Length: 134
Image 1: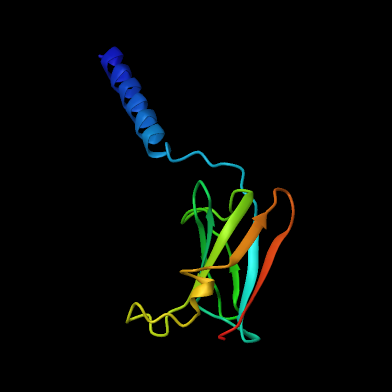
Image 2 (image 1 turned 180 degrees about the horizontal axis):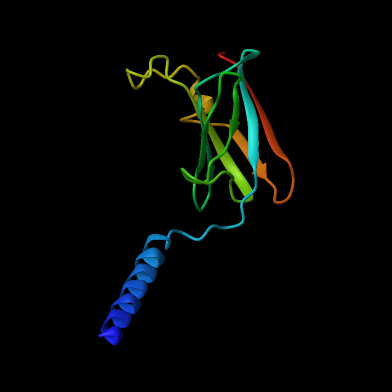
């Protein structure tokens, strides 16, 4: 009788280990660098702007600016940072978030962006984007 109870405990533990392994089998993270910055428009902080760092290959890092125009990039919804390398940067802000397609910023900052950034490993990566409406 004791032997069967012991076997059930072993099987239960093995199932728990398998379940935990399956749940934690998320993506393995590459080397990431912290990336922060500030976005201003005509000399004033730009709150609630979407910031995208798009590499030629790999995963796009993203952020939203706070009320002071500051941001910190996210690799995914749980992890901050971006992989080191060269990026095309797109910054957008809708005039009214409830009506998509009302972009406040000129296309040269988003759809036809001219912005770039070079993220370095083991260095401070703090970027300033001083945007102009004209």
